[in-house]
Image (cartoon, rainbow, N blue to C red; front, side):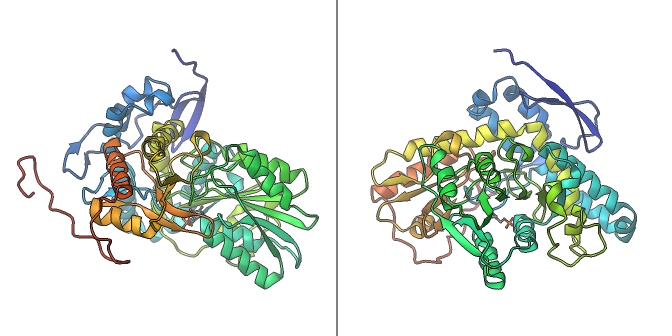
Length: 473
Ligand SMILES: Cc1ncc(COP(=O)(O)O)c(C=O)c1O
């Protein structure tokens, strides 16, 4: 079916893109894009094929169809230097850098080492601003509303501790929110007397309304703030953020969004959410180097939030007051531009659909096995992340067995409300990898596993890599 294109010109990193609003195509109009290095993956194969070439067949199909073209995705995997020692299904922690982004990071580090103070004193501010402009473009917000920070934890702590609340003011959050944010609010409560009210988010609800109602019911005349995690890291639940913001704003309540897992994974813009505050880690699904994060605030909120690290020099209406972090590694945020290029070329919508396809692929294979429980809602309420449990098997034991006996890396979740094993594939994950996971899960249910390793047991050393003739490499 022919697709209609609604074109928009985007200026990113000095490159003009023609952006199809319906499709992921970004047609480069200059030859500046650094996405075509020679790539050597784990098998030592040198890939001089560009991401654009790898994407060619996928780009001819609607995203939903392209998401299921497994052989084409094996080509995309060539853009990553994947370890052959283990199957990584724990990509929710951090995202591996695609090789072009890694090369940009290494190059920027070398360039900086050469220029160092010259760069810091004469070029850094312009470069930081350029990165912020680029990020603001894809986030759909003015660059004056974003600050470059180091991660979600920092971004959200700036808001949590920077907002003046008085004793008795109430904050609504949930025990499924990320531990560091819960702790930050607990500390604030101890220091200032604010009151944290925890709601129960229903597990794998059949519709969003049950979630919105859970927040609405907890509101009292003292409620000042709601924390919402856009994608809950322990279940993969995508939260109805816009609806929660609309409901809260109608009652004069502000909303802070923990976007650690959503930015760079879901096809949305921050302004779609109409939230008051949002922070994300660009080293997660966005695929930038570790230590890159973004904090967003509505213009009308900036002046009232105190910076976490003392600053009186900057205008209190400027997001720059939150960027006063001391000397930190510029190559990290400079490489955000390469990550951004990579995302734009692939298209976030395509990435989202592929990761949803992979999640559904393994979940569908195990969900009807007796004793297996899926703690993640279906299709549009989840994407890359899903969590399963097996009746009678502690999650930590499953995690250990997957690692020791199948060399599959996952993570056990032991939260008050959620106990299971989280699985997060990435765009370089093949369905063959997921077949190994589903066979292992079926085997566990059928009692096919060796001795259960003691907690904390180290996995055996990986088998030496062999070439096609079975000889050690
Ligand atoms: C939901 C959620 N929020 C916040 C964070 C913290 O991210 P960072 O360590 O990059 O600050 C994480 C990390 O996994 C997370 O899953």
